[in-house]
Amino acid sequence: MMQQNDIYDVTIIGGGPVGLFTAFYSGMREMKTKIIEYLPYLGGKVSYFYPEKIIRDIGGIPQLSGEELTTNLIEQAKTFDPTIVLEEQVMDWQKHEDGYFILTSDNGVKHYTKTVILATGFGSLKPVMLDLPHSKEFVGQSLHYSIHNIDRFKGKHVLISGGGNSAVDWANELEPIAKKVTLIYRKSSFKGIESNVTKMKRSSVQVLTPYELAGLRGKGGQLSSAIIENTEQAAFEEVEIDELLVNHGFHIDLGPITKWGMDITEAGIVVNSSMSTSIPGIFAVGDIAQYKNKLPLIAGGFNEGPIAVNSAKLYIHPKDPLTHLYSTHYEPLTKDS
Ligand SMILES: Cc1cc2nc3c(=O)[nH]c(=O)nc-3n(C[C@H](O)[C@H](O)[C@H](O)COP(=O)(O)OP(=O)(O)OC[C@H]3O[C@@H](n4cnc5c(N)ncnc54)[C@H](O)[C@@H]3O)c2cc1C
Image (cartoon, rainbow, N blue to C red; front, side):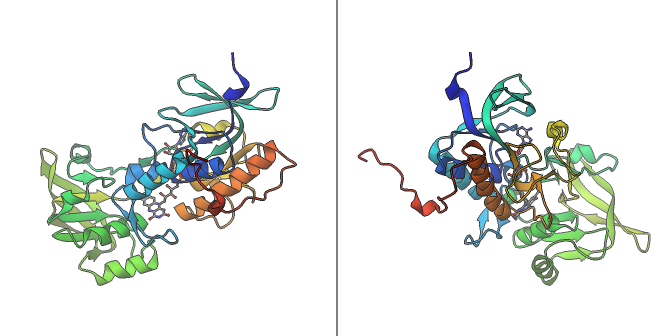
């Protein structure tokens, strides 16, 4: 039998960077908080795709690795002791006649909550894979879609395929440690952020455009060369390589929440300036939240989380105006106090 104290004030679905910071802020507002994460670990895309990449676009933190950011966020999220549930995918919701939500996970477990904050990112974390003969036999050995151990690229010739932020970022990160970095891109102008593209072009990275991967050679999982095509001239060449990094983007598959009945676009869930979705009591933050001029950046999500939490608190206590704003008002309780 469900008890009143089984009902949480806020359940955050998704334990990525934005969900984690949202949980911290929710604790600050003394909301009974639960995080439900599909993966067996926290950290979302940062842990999954780029624990070793250096992040440089969070205010006040000139640089830190993805892993350091995740460690810090987990520590911060645990300040107010939220309940953390791992390895459950939330599939469905219903509303009880008493007004609270009942969330059902893929394993049938039910979670009871007065409000829901969706921090589910782009749903699935699946990179666009290479569609070349034999490419699968190199995956995880010398063909990578993400980097979990940057040291393995030391002294190697690394070929990067892609022209977005990730590809350009990795070219700059690997250039000082690899023997050589070659980057090929199918277009002539880059999508990556300007200063990073400039840095790459001024470095020793060999940049080839418009080029595409046309074939791979090697054996036993180890690549020995790649066939690349200059698509303007329809000319092929073979380059010797040790490692191949493919950054061709990600599939957006928002998963079960697409059937929840909220206003939704291909890129995510439509929210208003309170981070409310079209279903009262359900809010969205981070990559999944869509509004005009949205930037899918971690720092932006760190503002959306507190907005959603404050909106959730107001939803539960409509007569309780927002008076608390700054974390500096929080003094951790000591044993003597
Ligand atoms: C290679 C790469 C490099 C990047 N570099 C930077 C950078 O330098 N700076 C920057 O600001 N941003 C960067 N980004 C973007 C940044 O990672 C995202 O903006 C950020 O991760 C969004 O956080 P989030 O918490 O909204 O979502 P996510 O990190 O995607 O986390 C969402 C979590 O929700 C879980 N989930 C989804 N559906 C469910 C469900 N139904 N039930 C339970 N759990 C669910 C997922 O498993 C996932 O763990 C980069 C992205 C990539 C891919």
